[in-house]
Image (cartoon, rainbow, N blue to C red; front, side):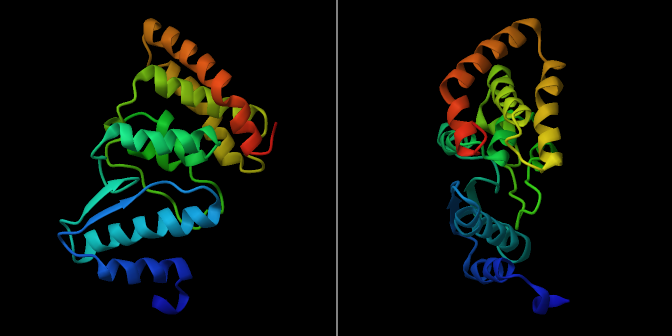
Length: 198
């Protein structure tokens, strides 16, 4: 047990956490590619959360995972960019409802670290139609086999749209269909290309 069995990522997160103090402000955005995401986003997030849990509870974390973002528009922009490239966690966060656990199910199988969503996904300021559009894009990617053999992730992507449909009013459902068509026209091809399933 202990540090003898820790991964390099876990050791880095602990080392970074030890440098963080109560009056620090931590910020991380999203990175592309598995290695870049691990070192530029996930490890710093884990470090900030570990620091909050151990010695710096008042540490302020912004954006991807340490609490509600200070600026919803600033938080949405990198998430939307990542989702347009077919990044599963970004798709999940943008299509999930207010339940934080919804977003947790979008972590790809075999991921080194599981990203942690904001404590209040509603802080991203997405309306029902926008969430529906992202869920529709995720479902289309799953239909095309864009998540490969990650069946859990594909199943989550396929279930997101119907789950949202059940909670929408007829007006929101119609707005969601329009938003989904617009998002597909603008970003569907690029997302499939980025995931290698076009």
